[in-house]
Image 1 (spheres, one colour):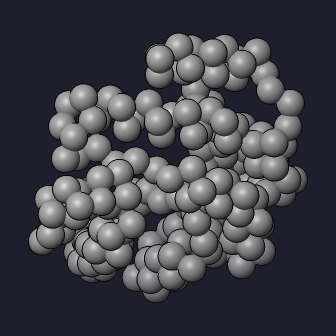
Image 2: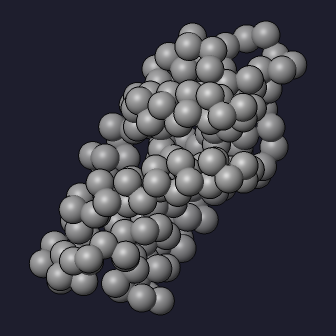
Length: 182
């Protein structure tokens, strides 16, 4: 994360604590955008991580890369919302124990906003057909959807994975995660 490179990072951390993320996100986004532009001009292979909060950034980035001759793919990791948010809490606590200045909390409302728009955003990106391939993975790294092989909609598969019935593995992951957070 580039947040810690923000010129006023420590002051923002001291003043806003866990909420400092709101004051550093634009800076971090511009840093990533600058790197993508520069590295793609040099022909590097890129793996870009994001939240898919909106379709704007992935759409813009995919178009930029396609215009430079890149093959662009989208990979999603589907995790039940409760498990996903629990993971953000665990990550925060682990990072805070190492270095409180580097720990970054995810506000629940922000997390839930992303989760609640993920399926629709995926559907929009599917309809734009800007990615050569869309794949969906689960946390165990197994690929459960590949647009190169599957004829169903990625958004429909994602909807079921996020909001459908819980598997025994997911239930156990939730139990273990809650124990870890105690």
